[in-house]
Image (cartoon, rainbow, N blue to C red; front, top):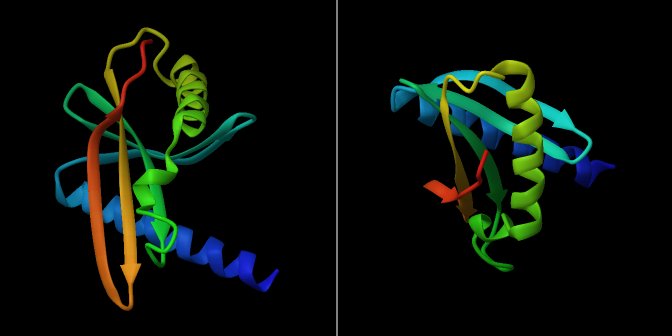
Amino acid sequence: MKGRLANLIKGSDAEKRAARLLRRKGYKIVDKNKSYKFGELDIIAEKGSQRIFVEVKFRSTQKFGDASEFVDATKQRRLIKAALSWIQVQDPQMHFSYRFDVIAIQDNSGIQGINWIENAFEATF
């Protein structure tokens, strides 16, 4: 349990850092950590008439690849399904346009890097 708790804390910290970055870039955080049976939406942000579903990925090393590489096709399908569920409740009239971003946070020996991938993948609504 110790390892799982540590990972949850690191993940939570990464999401807070991602939210701070979004705010600094002029985005408003609309919602966070929305869970559905097919997946979780980490952050939903808004700027102008666009809402962004942001998947936050943290990796402490690049031993198994860059953090952004962990948003594979299966993960993308789950995020799209979760986003559709969120939209049905929050914006059923589709007043906003939507996109999917990935914020990958890599921590290598204390040197931290953030890679924000806008329009990381596409979905048709």
